[in-house]
Image 1 (cartoon, rainbow, N blue to C red):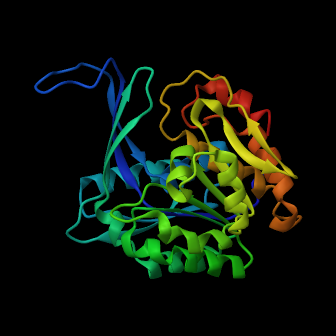
Image 2: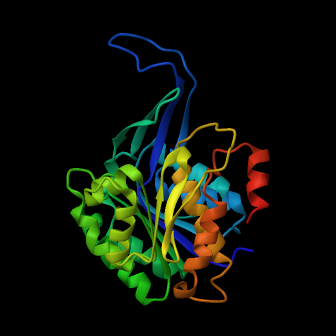
Length: 309
């Protein structure tokens, strides 16, 4: 049973996805392939995934910035339909963030991001959401929030001091190096990123060395996702690699967000009984059963995953 108030904060975008491409078209070339529009951005995906996992209406909130345009209306309609509590900052005269995702068969995804309103997210707006929502778990995604990024450590520190479980997620930063995120690491109970982001952050090719470095920086439980290969994370005095579920993949985008939602959902069941210092082992067990992609699974695969919670 879900036992937490989870606030997801950071960036939100509307995804325009072209999937199953035979190749990237050349100059002047037209390729016909399936395409669609979806709500995206780590906090939006995590919030929606939590609701799909069974969180109750009123238990999941999102704090992000949107523009004053039609894409804002699209984002609001999706979040409202899923039952997510919205604390959206509307940036007058700005556009909602957009992302173009190109998926070539047999290759990793390609992204083109336009941050827009995300770069105007107010530090005080997120603080207001935390206080109003009486948050018990705080998830924040950072990297394209401009001024907010440099103060993300303050929000994590505030939440830690208030007894909340904190989770930090990162993407390649816009117009700056990775150094901005380092002060935040010591206030993160859990940190998630993928292998490429980890290498960008620490400048090391070896993922296991990177996990040890994150632990030395103060992260209590680093979780590194590696696509179809699953993930790596510390467990007791060793590092484990957990393989991903074999599933019928509809769309690989958002798989890392589904993983984060699964971890938060499982931890919510333990919050009533103990604090995070006693939860790292439980979190590792949660990782073991949530290394697959939830939000992009077919219904039969989702039912299979739920039975493992």
